[in-house]
Amino acid sequence: MSTVTREQTVVDSVEKRLYIGGEWRDARGGGTLEVEDPATAEPLCEVADGTPEDALDALAAAHETQREWAAVPPIERGEILRRAFEKIMQRQEELALLMTLEMGKPLAESRAEIAYAAEFFRWFSGEATRIEGYYKVAGNGAGRVLTMKQPVGPSILITPWNFPMAMGTRKIGPAVAAGCTMVVKPAKQTPLSMLALAQILEESGLPGGVLNVITSSSSGAVMEPLIKDPRARKLSFTGSTEVGRVLIAQAADQVLKVSMELGGNAPFLIFEDADLDAAVEGALLAKMRNIGEACTSANRFHVAGAVADEFAEKLARRMGELKVGRGTEEDVKVGPLIDDSQRSKVDELVRDALSKGATAVVGGERLDGAGYFYKPTVLAGVPDDARVLREEIFGPVAPITAFESEEEAVARANDTEYGLVAYVYTRDFKRAMRVIEGLETGMVGLNQGMVSNAGAPFGGVKQSGIGREGGHEGVEEFLETKYVAVNMD
Image: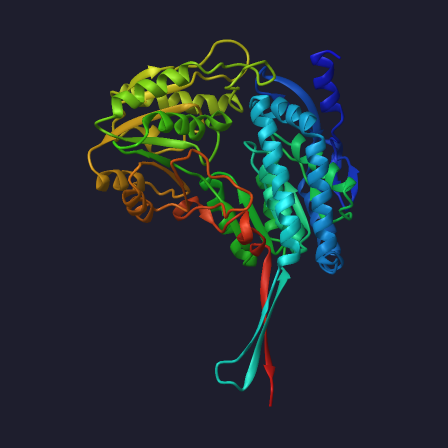
């Protein structure tokens, strides 16, 4: 079978309509949304372009199903997730190709994301049976305290384009485990992965109305009426801090329980005693995973002055060796950025840094031809007033600055409104613990360039978000605690 035929077959296998109340249906008015291949800037297919009315239909289905779904035994909810985990892994190759076509990342990374996404379903299949309350004697001995955990109710889940399946399973998994129904709105750039996931959950026995999927080109217009509808009880969003602020304000009207996984500006700290070769490999992972389009991407490299030049040279050599191209091509390590707007933003940040005195050790420009490609770039001597140190890059650009003391390194790392993740490279354990305790972030990678783990609580502080996803904490985001005061007189 030819590559073209295989690609088209994978795209054709995905349902393109809205999924509401267990039925696949066209958008009201028959509108469609074009999905583009960022490697070619050519259309892949069209999916239904949902309207606010469609979204309200989806919320109605979730609301009507909530009580019945909450009564399903936890072990049955867990078994649905386990079956879905197995089906995802059985279809890893097809799902990876689908993701590469709509998002751009190389196939190897897409395969890794599919496995990571499936792991959330496996993890939360177990968590479904571990939802607990407690019973205790009241402090004065006169009564008893009883607590129970119950599903918060119909939940609105908004997922991003950069990890189109993993960010879906990271929200859907705990919602299913907790007994919540959902309306999911995937990013308009990458709807196919979510639609494929809905098909898998349907096949795995998830009852109609529990999961409802709305694809739309008008996220704000479609989501606002849902968020302000009294039938919704929970909002979970992954995306930019700018959009998150708007959603939090909207959620205030109904006092929704909110989870926000927002932007990042991750510092990568390298001390003079670090294993520099290991730091370079960790930097490559932290920077270039997902083409740099990740909230956990290393955004600023703060390096001890004694080793800053050597680190820059070694990182530039490794970055320059990475093959750039369409993610379906052999040995490609760097795919296209998601669209021209994102590539233009990355280029603008690089131009700003260069104009203020930074040096491009490698890269620093777009690639000619079709698609939205940008050369892997290392910038040395980046001045403090460069925008690239303040704004989330979301691209393959590594800006490097030097520091002279531990205190300066921590101060530079914390000099941002964001606080999602930080990376620290040092062989001095006492220093590592001092630095980690001083960092204003929700997560830290110590001598490693990746922190993502389905069994760990993912999330940030400051303007990087509210709440946690994954780990035991993930399911708590979809639960409410009910307290019962028991009279023993």
